[in-house]
Amino acid sequence: MSTDLNYSATRDPFSALGLDVGNRRIGVAGSDGLGLLATGLGVIRRRSLPEDIAQVQEWIRRRRATVVVVGIPLLADGSVGSQARKVQRFVRALRATVDLPVVTVNEYLSTVQAEWDLREAGIPAKAQKGLIDQQSAAVILQTWLDERRASLSEVPGWRGWGSKDYAGEV
Picture 1 (cartoon, one colour):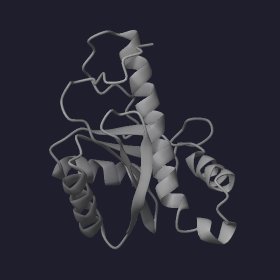
Picture 2 (spheres, one colour):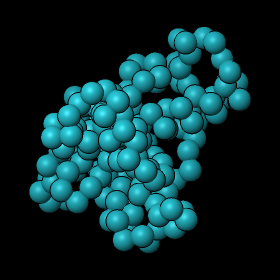
Picture 3 (tube, rainbow, N blue to C red):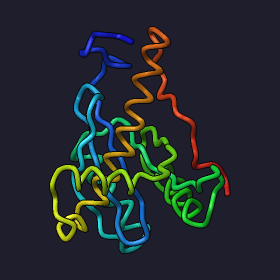
């Protein structure tokens, strides 16, 4: 693994935006400029697909995102269920409206991990409700950042976004 913490896959400014797309809310997370650390940023209250996409576009603009990472909630056996199909539709709509890579990762158990992280941070259960979605987005984004960094260390000079796309056709 590379020990150069200033290494960037493209040597260009890097800003990843992570999304945890649910029925009522979309958790939003962002990366640091080196692509090492994901942090929960906020929540988008869902209204309609066009309004939701506009809100994501605003986050992209504000964060100067160069890639968007969306969690797809696959089932335990890796198959696509009804919730994953809803998120896949969202991803297709987002890809049609933004001019940057939109990649997907399997987010299986991201909410469980987010709840555990918040408990470990000493945040009371009542206060967690508003934080779980953004923390889930951070877990999703951190998973992708870690996978990306591992791939980059294995292939010197590699410049792709790498990551299996789970937003296939339904």
